[in-house]
Length: 437
Image (tube, rainbow, N blue to C red):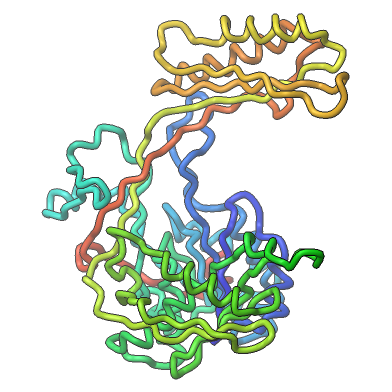
């Protein structure tokens, strides 16, 4: 079984996605869309985080040819966030438009726990912060998202229903590999050592080592960075890592140390379905661009899943202002001085920042001023944005907004808790793409 992993941007499909899928002879492509902890909020609109990444449908459209031609190729994505069904409906419409209406698509629902946090607490689920030990009732800021990191079980259920595209709100990053291996090889869920081997391979699939690119001998050309293209997981749990640059003892050593350092701290209780032990892990050369993984051990997980809660910590607004090259130094100083006086919203205790950036190039080059404001008050940040616009207008034609009008963002902190698996209901629904669209 061949697996590739990509960290994805919610705003655009990953570069080279179509080529990776078409050329890698993949069995599973894992697309991890991390929910952003900061997002723009419009005046008068509710303070909310995005419900799903709009770029996922674009990515599926790019993958449609490989999905159509390669029957073994499957996509597993953490793209559902707050609404896996709505995400699947939008993605299915893209597949239908690309001629893949007969493709089975699964939505894994239940990882969005924001609507039921109070119910869970009332039922006795302890949502204390596993990093700080703080009690849930001590959190005063409003939660904006609560994403359960699903284990491999629900994903395996979707694959067992022959789903070619599986969309969950969020999952443990190691869960797709375990689910796919169990589905393909019929491994028992208690075969912890094989599950551990698949989990370590999935973790290795996210490795890239750009620092290693600068270690060429003196006088030699710099080598390419070691980056994993995909990993192979065999039925006997042997794992092979395929690199984009030539393998070497240094690459093996760096990957082994990286895997050993991937300690999840308090969260390391086996959310994906197995506890990992990499103390005896060996990484050895297996070919010109290949490394072999061996020696991972596994144990029974503790029966909980990680819950990641994003809570509102405040708001911010910022803008980058360009100063015309013709503006003399005295005018520039006057503009910066005026900005520091004018950009503090009255009656608010937030922090305004006015920073003049050094111009690049010749003396006649333009300069820049970075304007920023952080506050607990959303209204004050919108006021700051208005003041910034007025400042630029007052000094035309010497100033212009280099990045468009200032935008107010809500910013979030992270609260990690653990939830027993049997405390939540997870639903898996598989339909043809044309039935979702």
